[in-house]
Every structure is written in structure tokens, then in C-alpha cells.
Length: 244
Image (tube, rainbow, N blue to C red; front, side, top):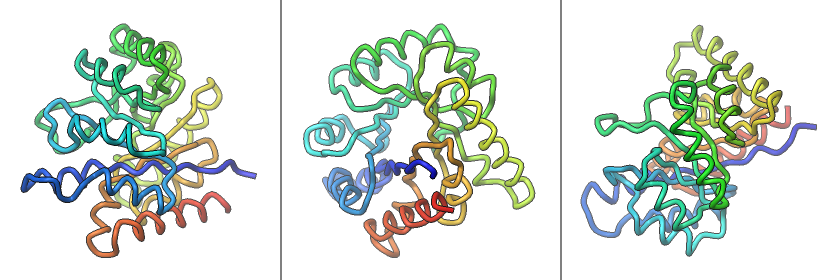
């Protein structure tokens, strides 16, 4: 029997809509409460250096008001490390970050930045946070993550989601093989970025993946069906794929 698959709901883009006009509405913390009621297993929020969506006060309220585990996505910078150690979220996910990008583009090059990232993994782990690294589905990056002591990796699924039908099968194979290798070297494997109703089931069916983190599609779909319904439908598709 396959193990259960967790759903982490990323609420960044509720904050994006709020920030487009200013003021308190829509409130991303309220969306986190709704996600919990709709079947999410955790909440993900990316506190960017430029604060383009989630704010410091959002992180404070999420840690104080939400019972679900909080996964704080963050760049490997001294500022973000200090914030994470102060708030001590359940989990932290180190991600690459460029000020000019619209969204996170690709994974960390852990193999190239092992010395830097090792210190962040150690400091966050010492603070009691579960640490993951957002990486491409690549054996070299997985081995580097294991070498620097990260217990968890999150595979970037953007290339799979954006690919044409023919190329998508190749990208899915990369994810399947990477997830299997992660398990073989003792890493817990997560996945996310760009997943939608149309693309989630093949990834959800991979037995060596423990968690999916999904946000932009759910917030966009909420415009038409409501946030709770979009999360419930994603949860249904994930569970259906996992049961096959």
C-alpha cells in the first residue's frame, strides 16, 4: 500500500492580490485557515527579500494563528536566516531567488554552493526546523544535498508542467528517477512548482514522493470556484492518483 501524500498549500499569491492595491484584503492568513478546513496538510509561504507578496507580519501571524505546519520558503541570506531562527517554523525550504524573476526559476545549484548552503542547513536544523532544498530532479544535486546534511529535497516540477506532451513524458521520467534516488540515499522527497489539475496526477502517483506544494494554480482557480473547492479538488486528484 502506498504511503499517504501530503498537500502543502502555498498562499503567496493571495498576498500578491492584496499588495496590488494595498490594504488588508484579501488576507493570506484567512486563506491559510480556509486551506486547513479544506484538507491541506501544511501551509507554505515564501518571504522574499523584496517582500513582493508575503510580509514579515504575515509570517508572524501564521506562526501564531495557524495550527498546521508552516513551511517557510527563503533565500540563503543572513536576513532570512535570522527571521527563520526567530520564528522557528516547522519547516524551511531554501530556494534560489532573483529580484527580476516573476517566480522561482529552477532549483538551487547545491553542488556548486555546498559550502554556503551547508552552514544554513546546519543553523536551521539546530533551530529545530526541518530543512529542505529546492532542486532540479538531478542525481548530482541530490547527492550534494545529502552530502551537506539536508534531510529533505523538493523537486522542481516546472519543466514537467511547461513541457509539450512528448517532452512531458521525458520530464516525468526525470522526476520518477530522482525521487527513487532520493529515497535510496535517505532523503525525504517533495515536489512542486506549476502543478495543476491537468498535471498533478502523474506526480502524485510517484510512491517515493511524500509531499506536494501547490499555490499559484489553486489561487487562480479560486477566482472561479472558490479557494476551498479548488483545494478539495486538488486533494481529490492527489488521493485518486495515490490509490491506483
